[in-house]
Structure formats: C-alpha cells, structure tokens
Length: 241
Image (cartoon, rainbow, N blue to C red; front, side, top):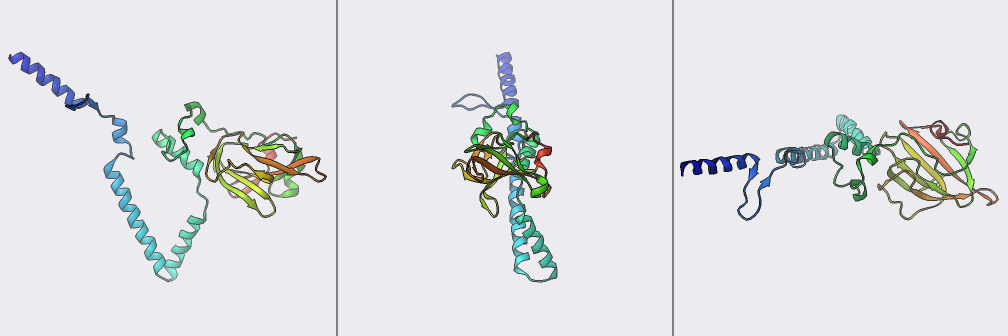
C-alpha cells in the first residue's frame, strides 16, 4: 500500500511541474512562449498603460501652458504627429523581435507562408512602356508612356499611405515600403475601388489605369521613388527602356 501511495504522489508531482489538472477536462499545459510573450505579461501591460496615461497628462499640461519652453515642446510634439508613420518598417521590426505579426494586420498577411515574409529589395516595372519624360527633366519622377488603357501595378509590396488626388499629379497612389522608401504612382485615369488607405498590398497589385497621352493613342503615368525625404531617379532601381 505504501508503494502505491508513493507512485501516486510521484505521478501528481510530475504533473504539477508541467501544468495543472482540470477535474472536468484534460491536462492543461502552459506554453512558456505564450506566458513570456509581452502581450500576455500582466505586469508589463500595466506598466505600459500607466506610462501611456502619464505621457497623455504631460502632453496635456504642455499644451495648457504658454511660455518659451512649452512652445518648443509643443512644436516638437506637433512635428512628430505631422511626420508619416512607417507602418511597413514597424511591422518588420515587430516580426524580427517577437516572431509573429501584429494581430491588427490584415488576415491574409497572417496566413502567408514564412517564405512570403521576406521583403523584396527589387522594384518591378509598374507597367510596360518607355520613358516619356526623364528624371532630369521632371526633377522628382519620370513619365512613362504605355499602351492605351494599360493597368498600373505596384512595383514593390508595402502599405498604402495615400490614395486620392494630388495637385499637378491628379489621381495618385503612394506606397510605403519596409525600408522606409516610398513609390509614387501619379497621373492615373482612375484608382481601383479596392485600393484603400493603410491596406497592405503585394508587389504586382493593380492600382488603376493610365491616363491618356496627347492624341489619345497611347497612355502615360507618373512614377517616382522617395528616399529619406528626397526623390531619386527610378531608372537606377528598375529597368525601363
């Protein structure tokens, strides 16, 4: 009888190390990765909430008071909020740190295979055509002449940070990439209804149609690449005739 009691104690001792026993269900084993994940750490979550509240109160006090020092702080805060948030770069950083994408990302990205998570460093041609106006002439981008009613596609995957009309460019879509560069697609005849602000798009996603060139026999669109707040010559990163 003593040996039997020792066996039972040993059995339940081993179980207590792995998890807990549910009288109405199977053994519950705790996932150490889930337990240590920052999103499930109660102490870290409370600290983040408290820090957010304190930061909110500090910002409120700064904007309530008027003075030379608070004016500098106000200008600094305004500058931060006016800067464009780098969604693609933040996504890559999170995945490198924690191994899993944010829960707020689109479901289709969560279901992609590990191979698809590798970011392409090469720009594809948005539409077949030839350079109609060079970067030297334009100063910011190039004008590409195409066939009539051609589709314009994303040259590289990223997040849509602008989709609408811009002065001198007409219908325009701006894609932000994980390396913090941007690709601009302007002078479009129309933008597809599926193109929504802050959506993630893969390389080769249709953005819209080219506008008509003079005479209406051919099409054209504007293409530019912005890096570190300056525009660079797209012909240096993509192969266009």
